Image (cartoon, rainbow, N blue to C red; front, side, top):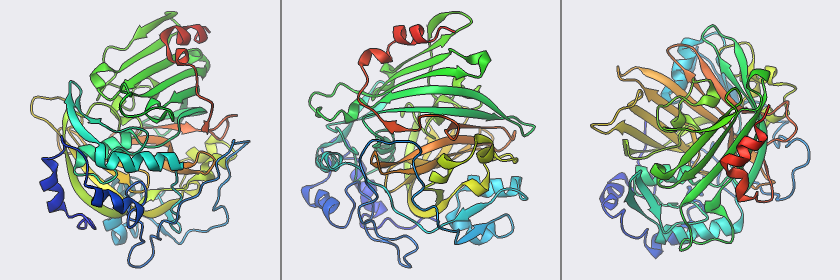
Length: 452
């Protein structure tokens, strides 16, 4: 299923893994980011049959977003569809989670495959920082596991040596300096009903990408996030706040509970602890398909392969309603999703001896052009494929970037699920904003806004 990595063989990667605490790649290797590799480290060339085209710069039209973000490929039709009847024919390009969904919902689940469009882009200053990171960044140990050192303002390891570096590329992927978005989230019950559990106003800042910073002055906070519920009525005024550090042992999160009218610091916003914003359906480490501590698992770089993934799904942002996106099945409406063939990095996580997690094995699939984890497969302690996660990649030329939203998880055993980030019915979709004041991301600020 997994082909030998082009340009850099697996054997070479294994040999280089021991050097991970040292500086990054050689100047000669880094120079490939300006020739055969994209500025983010993807293969610039297409594949042999051109079903994956060459990357030619992506789609970038920086500027203020007004109204709905358009679908740049609205006129295109699917090349073909994958159903339960022909899924076996495409199994080598499907993750195990999607194969399981075809078996579980043979009459309703479908993947419509469109022409591949490599829209990923970023500002030039992010590319410049990524080029510097390639030869300067390394990983060092912290109380929260291995963390990057010497990286700033770009992909930390565009030419990665191992699975740990690849996962850090996801955690520190480009998604803007500061953004605001309104969104709704829905829980899929075991009896097949979609219930709205969150209607939120969300602010995020990414200090790792503050343009005036540098690796020498960077203090380690990489993601500030604040979400306040305006609905449903029973949850109106609730809020959650996080200040996330490279060293996850130093990260802090708080919730505001309207019934108690107080801020409460979360004692364990980590790993397999159920996330309050998902009504307990998904875990903290399933936010963004993966986020959280790196120290509980061993991370194995499996390889790279071609895979059908949800990409350029801007049609979702232009749907008439969330109900249209959710559909009537136990999964998102296939009519509203666009899938494309892309190359993905494959990383496998297995629980370290002495650690505990309800899902001790996971496999993550990262889009080579953005380093975003777009799909995941997760196994329980009995070795049963239990969950599959996803992010729908959206082309955002105004950012510029290609960002995963919405995101969610399907429980393949119970039939429940969760999806976050639907914005067909909100006023402000994901968009860049002037950098917020740091005090916005404080417990006092959350409490002040959370009064019902």
